Image (cartoon, rainbow, N blue to C red; front, side, top):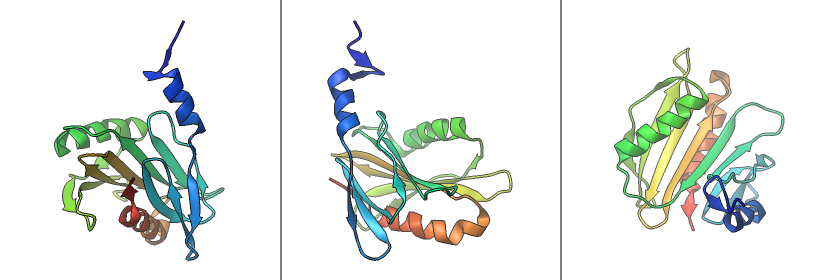
Length: 169
């Protein structure tokens, strides 16, 4: 008899499936999405997907291309180099591209973060990432997939809003 599903106990898996988010309208075109371990602000009316068993959630406009993403990981001792290499492994499996070197920045929240992007075949940084490390609560990986260069300004605005408002709980 199997008592685990993909390394998770059945009880943990069922708990992940019933957990959902709470959405609060901020009255400025954005909503705060409160998940069990974090909160982010995203455009109002967008689809907020359920969290996967590995801690990923996608947020996207209905019927349009492009998406915001958030993924969590438990606390660990990984260096920025290790986190970057691990992230790129999965990013490149999903879609190839040329990754930029990461840059470590200090956020207003006081946490360190690494930011980098992946360029498409035309050299456009269509995928952008921010990894926020909280020594006690883990890692929050935020991303944006910009549907095209003509949409860069609007999608950058949404990504900046999400990254500047992301909080650990």
